[in-house]
Amino acid sequence: MEVLKNKKTLQDFIERQKEMGKKIGFAPTMGALHDGHLSLYEAARKENDLVISSIFVNPTQFNNAEDLEKYPRDLNRDLSILENSGLVDAVYLPEVEDIYPEKTESQHYNYDGLENEMEGKSRPGHFDGVGTVVEELFRQVKPDNAYFGEKDFQQLMIIKKMVEKKQLRINIKGVDIFRAKNGLALSSRNQRLTEQRRDDSKIIFETLIRVKDEFKDKSVSEIKERVNEIFSNQENMELEYFLIADENTLKEISIKENGKSYRAFIVVNVDGVRLIDNMHLD
Ligand code: PAF
Image (cartoon, rainbow, N blue to C red):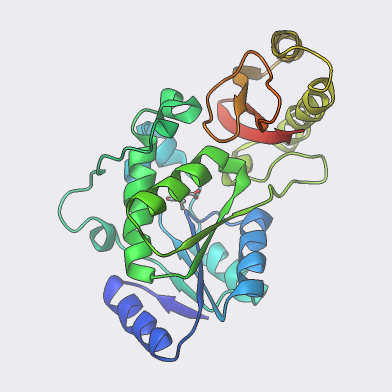
């Protein structure tokens, strides 16, 4: 596996690959790799000649300095995971100046309102930071296909929108949420939970399964009431939000309409760690 430590080395590498006509699959990450990331590489491996990942903890997408500081970082561990997986041909490790040559600040994006829902409300500026880093990485890596987990479903939709608006010729592929045996969606943040809390957190997945079932014959307000009740009885957990939204606009709904697709979204703080999950509803 090639380890590309700056923009210049990456650019030389990409140029050689493009000359050879290689189809590039790309999965950007912020490190603290887990099996969810490996599932992105597996998807990329099937559809491309070359798989590239990047590890860069992007400062502009954190609206909370403490969250940025506490974000788990262990480059040696990540590199050995990548090497041992045998799924990745090259990893790009940009320095801050490679992404932000002038000022470490976000550009402003208009994602047709997708940015104003859910995470956009809870984390102001977050999606400007995501758009800025992902657009820059796309321009440097020049992938044919790029892979993102559906755990961050709003991020996936926003990146699709950014690519469409900027007319970048990159296919954005969503990859199913990778879950632990107990159903907890894998996330780098899970590392900050004790084993006991990780086990307790299976209630998030169990609740989503229940919502999916109840969505067939219960009203949205009945479902929301039930979810609030479930979490009000959980010690050490605080429900930040639960809502059901139109899968295309991400706008919260209160009434179901025929012919539309819906998805349930949930954020729970467990011992101060923010866990996010979602599920498609039939
Ligand atoms: O999902 C992530 O890990 C990050 O938001 C991303 C897409 C790598 C951008 O920093």
